[in-house]
Length: 248
Image 1 (spheres, rainbow, N blue to C red):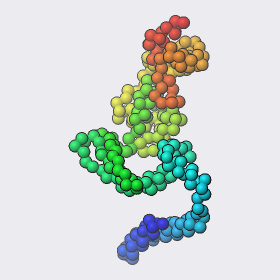
Image 2: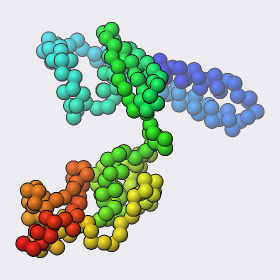
Image 3: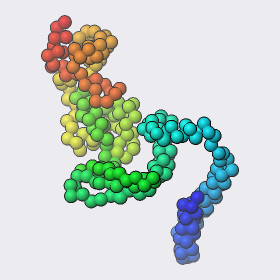
Image 4: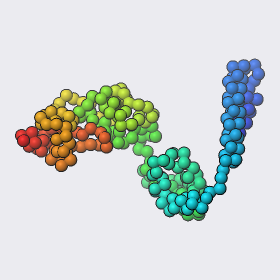
């Protein structure tokens, strides 16, 4: 509510500061001011409603909260715990975070000051040259590296989207974005060679069903790699085990 009020006052000051002759700017600033007024009113209404609906905790609820406080990892990893709730928890238990410069340029040293008076330290790796917060996740890069052995960029994009991966800019994948990622990380494109095959191609080569191939992979008779769960299995066709299975 305080933030909404601040934004409303800021928008008003900007509107008051503009020259009346500059009608276009004045009109835009007036629209922003009206929007800030609406957001401030909405925040105040939510605050009043929350204050009215707040109820004291029962003894059972207090005990459950006390048990959760003794196992924060369970609370943190609960599927029903959304990101906004985790942020509220951190704002409640953390007083401040101090970043110290380190002689080692590869890491940051963070000093965490907790609400109870306890201090702890945390070391965080710095971004390497060329890396930033919009870079693709390492698991995506590894997955593209493996899939490029058996798939075209268009197929790789479909697999990444099906697995729920996004680009560094939080966009869905397409062939051109996959090609850009490959080029940046120097990953060779797919070549129509027989060195690597998918599970389905292995089944056709061995003249068996997919179920048989899955069993051979599970038994480690047929060496295969899977970068992440639910990703396609990557099988090197020239392995000795593959040739042995093929002869069988």
